[in-house]
Amino acid sequence: MRREPREYRTLDEDLSRVTHTERAVLHSARPLMRLGLGLIFIAATAYVGTGFFAGQPALGILAAGMAMAAYVAMSIGGNDVANALGPAVAAGAIGMTTGLVSVAVMEVLGAVIAGGGVTATLTEGLVGSTLGEGEATARMMLAALLAAGSWISLATWLGAPVSTTHSVVGAIAGAGMASFGLGAVNWPAMAMIAFGWIVSPLVAGLIAAGLMALLRRLVMDREDRLAAARTWMPVAVALTSAMLAGVAELSWHGSGLAANALLVLACALLGWLYTRRRLDRQSRGAGGGRLAMKQLLAVPLAASALVMGFAHGANDTSNVAAPLTIILDSLSAGNPAAGDDALRGRLVLLLGGLGIALGVLLFGRRLVHMVGSRITRLNAARALCVSLATAATVLGASLMGLPVSTTHVAVGGVFGVGFYREWRDRRLAASHAPLPAEERRRRHLVRRSYMRMILGAWLVTVPAAAALAAALVWIGGI
Image (cartoon, rainbow, N blue to C red; front, top):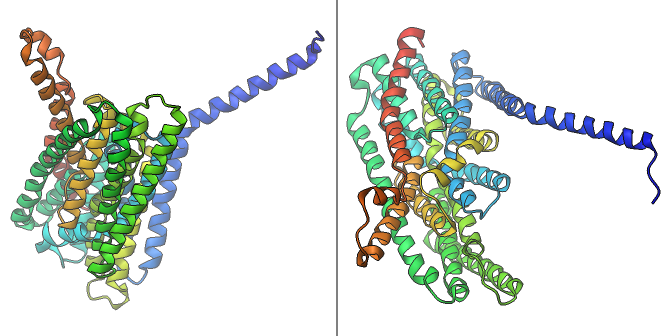
């Protein structure tokens, strides 16, 4: 066998070293590249915003508000993408990169199409008595945005999936009290929002547990899982597609009831047909063998993750859009050059959606595994139940204009599935001899340590964000 000349082998080794060096440099530069892209987006938002609203006074406050809104939006995207994508990635139904891009697109659509209702609730209800105070109101909201963004970024860096809704609402309340006193906060509205925070995870947990029981009965416990999946999985995707189409149409108010029903039926039919064809191809490719549940549930799980991305954009965009809307309204009061309110509202929602989408793409990987794998182990079936329960709860809240915490709801769904599994295992083991207490603790499927950590983060978030916003008002004179 003819050997290569030595100089060629040496050249190949040198080229290989250069290639490895280039790869190492690119890998080490990725965090800086993501940070740089984020800073470019913040600067571009401030520049374009001040140009578009150039007829308003106090352009410095406006530019700072636009920049902080972009920063908070990216922080929300980086923190909350785990809610939509964590279960699907943990179950292996969708790749990380594909999932991030798909969810980012759905975030923008949800913000623009269905984000107006919740934004109106936060804009008009929480600190309504402070509106109309001009620059003082704008400065208050600027402090709230800065405090909320700082707290969310800290939580993302620490790997804690805190509630961005809690952060923003707490920051607005703290800044309002520091600027205008205790009477600045609409406490009945605050109580209603807090009630939604309590109820929504419980609802999601119950829905997730019910879906888990139904899925086991209809598919997982059947002798022929493939036949059962071919019957029921297209139905699940059809209902998910119909839910998304119906909520989007109702939020957009683009047509009447007949057109809405027609759109819902068309989307349901398309979802059913696609899933049925996909399962048929999988069954033929299996050659008569058994298919794993991950393969059978891949399409429904990916669809539910996309719907969850839409729901998150529809609900959590208000955390950016509401403070920015208050800033713009405060600065433009009595100014005829401020522009059309409806157009301005759409642009604010678009800005929030784009910022959240960019945060998803640049900073969203860190928390995806927290929700998907550290609370309770999620296979495809459990992840599907969590995603569907979360999407249904958040979309329902968005239709009612209620700002709920998608993190609250998503983790509530995960807890619901975990506790259902514990209950089912205890029921199946009732006929056996009781286990020692230590062994029963080791068999807990919901990890209590993470549960306590997340609950602690939720309890701390509102007062911490409020205190930080108040400190910015007092010390910085914002």
